Image 1 (tube, rainbow, N blue to C red):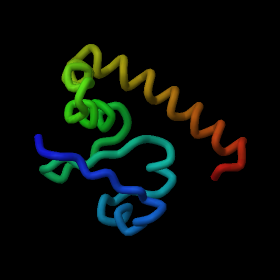
Image 2: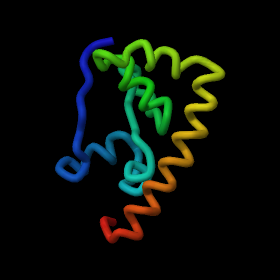
Image 3: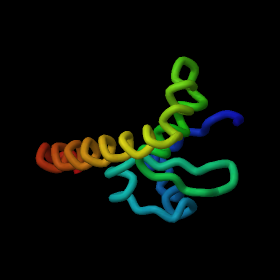
Image 4: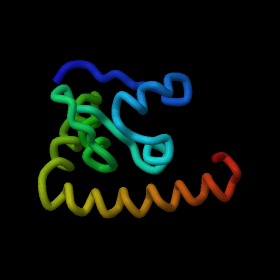
Length: 93
């Protein structure tokens, strides 16, 4: 896989429309777009990012394979909702 492009949607909100996602969705879970154009949400997006991050490549590959992908998705889902609620309660959004 080639390089990774990180887009700060607060500075480039048009990226949301190109990806077909809302600001709410991006605030709740990380999103990634594969080279083929598939939009990944949550743990699959994290695992994809890890596969191209030095020091995390092996972890990224492991987290893409069952049963690790399943358990990682559950943990990520819970953590994402807790973090979203905390940010809302703190007045950040």
